[in-house]
Length: 332
Image: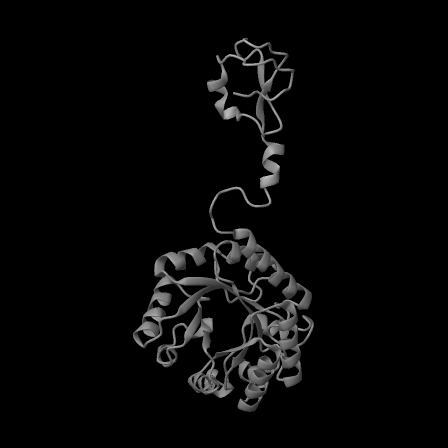
């Protein structure tokens, strides 16, 4: 199977600081992620001045500001994008960012990003989807808050405009996502309905859900992380810290190995155990040459390097060609 693509979602957990952003890149690298992802937006293009914050944002940010004020402080300008892109190249990790408006799509395209990650909130944004579709890049589409009809419509727009390589991520946008609302089986529904590669963008607390998603066939995993969950900002509390992110990456790589190739046969490590764990037909008691083998003088015991017990019926009624001591392997 192909390697699972692990995206460490830094998002806006840099709090507007280029130094914190670089530390997040360092953390993603050390944890073993394939990519680190930020968010690209102009506040004035994304939210109106009076737009309210989500409930989880109200709990984790300054309640005296509206959504516009909150995200305005979290913008990364072109120069910061270039600096982070160069730093990712230096650290040998893929730089990704989700654009939240058409101006941001243009910026990321000018920076020659090969993968465009569409956030859940844009799945019903036709002009946005059309603009990304025309780029004909690899697309990873998050589907939080959506139903199958909305996913189908988004895929149709992307494909009609030239994009063919699309991976669809099941997602729930509540931070953190209650376990009862994770609904991992929906990922398989998406895969079956649209015949696409699927993955999971996780906002649940802890590490177990993305690991389970990989076991169910996810090809892409996205998980928020932070330097410190106690930092002020909308997403820190629902993010993983370094040791948790590292644990997720390690577990995913182990699950990849454990999934194997699907062929049911003895593994290389099992071969030495076959003779030890399986059994053979042996003499139940001393048997004289010329006696007839029967259930009274034959039994089944370890080791498994003699005649298989699957040939039991074949052996019953045969004549002993030599003397046997109790527990001795029977020969033909």
